Image 1: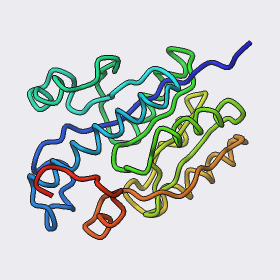
Image 2 (image 1 turned 120 degrees about the vertical axis):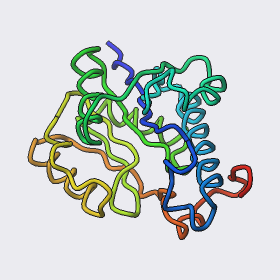
Image 3 (image 1 turned 180 degrees about the vertical axis):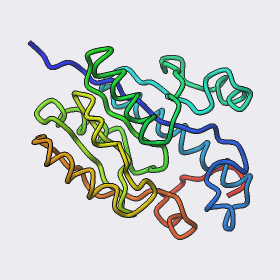
Length: 211
């Protein structure tokens, strides 16, 4: 029997100036930072669709239909499923999405962010393939976090009381995976775009209006 394909869940915040990528504002301005956030969201969606690894879901904050998404929603690729993020802090929202897919739908899940242009279709496809042979996959980023996590079961311990937005996130997640006896595939180290110094890691030709 062929392995079940995962659902690719992209966690995203509406790219509204002043509320996203605020650490990039000193270099790009509020509007430029929001434009780059929007460009990275569009890139992540298109790479996930091109990976052809499973159904693509955009898990949104604020929820679908909120005015913050009005313009962007018109441009979302048609196959993308739109859902709302759950209540709570980042860990609670991620844990809820993983539980909903793995326990509710009975599917593996690849949960990913939108801040890493180096997360290409090929890398997403590889993570999906590796999840067939492992209990979990993790793609770390250079600041100590991760851009993608893949699971076949809820594993709420991976998300509780995590020091999010610190350099300890990936290491602690891997430690917790080991404590749960999970077979883990770790992807190559990539770069998030969070600070002005990170802009050197944008791919050639990758930009947003006004940058």
